[in-house]
Image 1 (cartoon, helix red, strand yellow):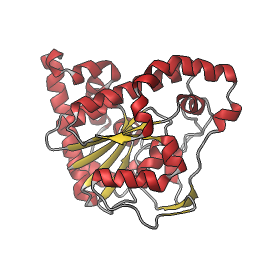
Image 2 (tube, rainbow, N blue to C red):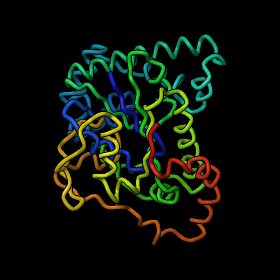
Image 3 (cartoon, rainbow, N blue to C red):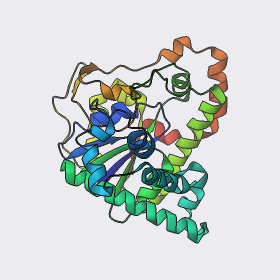
Image 4 (tube, helix red, strand yellow):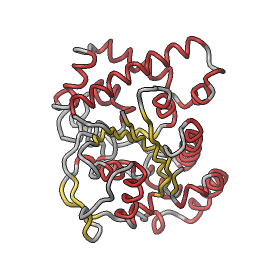
Length: 313
């Protein structure tokens, strides 16, 4: 089984990237931000990308039931607790250097890995896919996947300008997946959003050290938005697919309905869309905020300098 994990910071365009990757080959199934599958997906029964609640979605309802049977609220909470004991950012060092971890942590990690493997196997069985795309972005999730021998993990590290990410975190957006109420997506202040960008991009960079050669690629969001066909061609070559042909016409592309279990609200949109580089922050973000963000993120930017041109190794 091959799993393509999109890693990096939130608000970096991962949902768009995932949906474009899904156009490369019919053997690819895009799962969305799988790290949210337990709590927000099945637990809260939010909307799948197809527009139906997860427990009524023809794909996810089948996968959950065939993997675990009828999950009670207590059973799903046990899985959520297990995930939190293993995949949180605070445990990143234990996942990077397993010999330093305690035996109880190791046992819980193995238990969670077995659940992930069973679930991912069932996704492949139900959908007929051979490649799964997971836009969770969290390096801790990637390290757990990397430790499963039956999974061939590829990591696509998506990097977006930190000012653009911070600006996006401060936007007010409705959470369309919560169909029973009017709620809005989480917003973060400048300091927290900058720290989030640094932590998750450095963690994604560290993830590279736990992968075999050829399984890690870096891509700029700006490159994807300006020249999506070229960027997608690089990804196709990296993954061993044929280069995309006839998908784009003047930055327009047709996106079919999907079953992304979580992610940006654009997962609910289907049909022909125009890909545009979102640089609203350049005009609307005060200069002092730009300076502050660049000062806070400059050490990480220096470390990730090589990633900003897009590369794979």
